[in-house]
Image (cartoon, rainbow, N blue to C red; front, top):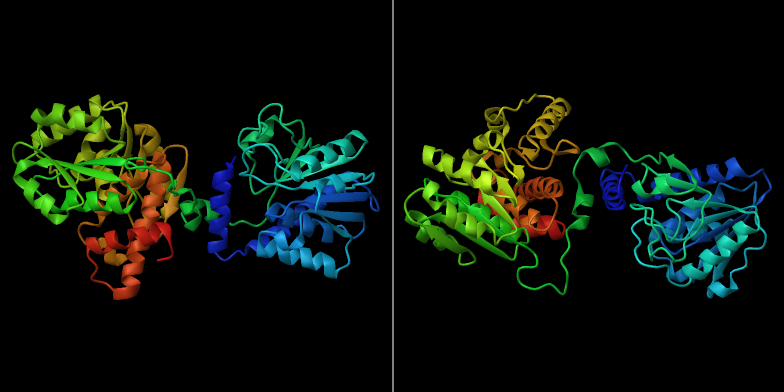
Length: 484
């Protein structure tokens, strides 16, 4: 099963791997044509009703593979309004091949005749809300043709149906296409199981790596509401420092660059001035002494309750009192936290209601009780099993990062040997924290690994090796929001 959002990401990742979207559309249209041939004899009449996006493009391609049938293609709108280049190319191919095509300016003028098969290629996955015109009127025309005996084949998902839930997008009484058969692509969609229709899952040539590895498609969900206010994009609390001043500062600055609106640092008073001096953008909340200790539990816990996510561990050290603080904090915390560095060793020994994202390197993973291996796929299996055992999300750093939560596994291969320099792990923890303030833990970990490595790759491409951790922070916004 794959959700519509994840399918969009995988589709974009496939394109980044060198599989052209045009090639995927060719395979999709061919799969739709095969379904038509399975329900209708040669020479049968087939009406293909197409929208102006890539779902319509799949319908244009299908028409070319149905030369032995009496095919008519009905575009809902003007040809110049076709939304994508590849769909537009396939429309022109139909015109040049003299396939009967009709541009329907007003859906009330849609004339399907008495077809044996109607192909619904109006709207694909990811559409929300009730059908609007011209699709609403066209859906009613398709339903009427079905009542008259036509078989309806839907492309990817029936128009007006949510692919993730199977419900009508405009509510229970809203208009939707009543499909007899659905040809969906790459993998089954969760909402299709409940439909009274035959579902065919078509392999269209998306490589397994597009789903297995992180890629630019994973960034599609990283958006910002133009009407948002301060705090709407996440507030992060970094709890760290004592023996080290740079580590919590790197994490905090990375969280800001990853998109968090506000980042506060809870650190010992002995280093508070130095931490504040690194950046005017940070809000420092100092606690007495030179190390975080159990006596600070109430103050830090009260702070944590007011934040979307806590980044726990950067620069804390491994003093007995500090680790006891970590243990007690996690035992009483029920929010979301990124756990890094010395704090990781405590996680397997604590029962907590918190959602944890743990970011160990392979040595720290062993210290937590997990196992690793040289082969990336074997390591992924071991990490996934350990994530299931401890019931938390893991991001295990390495040449190939492994992200797992006991249900899903992903690998990340961005990054380079220049990132072995100290502090890059603190940047990663802060980046994941900034993303986790507004995204689910697994997604935040996967995207965090991808963009941190991507930022490092951009720095090395520009300057060569010799990068420092602060170089990554400065490139994070580019790695997340635009081409590096």
